[in-house]
Image 1: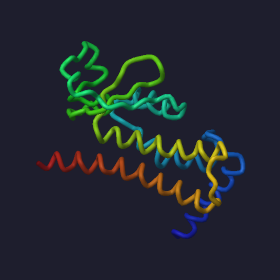
Image 2: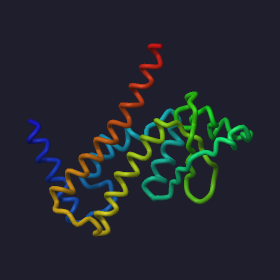
Image 3: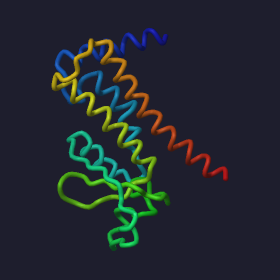
Image 4: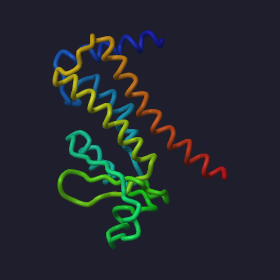
Length: 172
């Protein structure tokens, strides 16, 4: 069964690689959106989650560390954008050492370490896919495929680590 799934995934990858694009209509990307990207970027605040996903797809999302000395100065909009101790995506009370900006304009949103891990896992996937699309990857198809599988695993691990941490916190 695993061999069949692997062969199907590899066939989908090879078909996509013939004309690589970020178009979700290919079986390859459609599967990854459904199984990996969607779940990884699904946060409590669904509207903001969709904006984050669009920014990741458009390569217009910025993640930056928060200067700890600047943390006490929180604007009135901090409820919507999170704050140094509340993640804008999950709504959970967490120390937020990073913030994101969607595009050139707009607000910064404070994000927890687990939200950052999930976003960066998806960004890493898209970076590699863009490299393939631009012809910058000089590996054979099988090596590229296994790197894609590794990046998919990273998205899954990032999502599962957050769930594990939430469960552990509830036990305490």
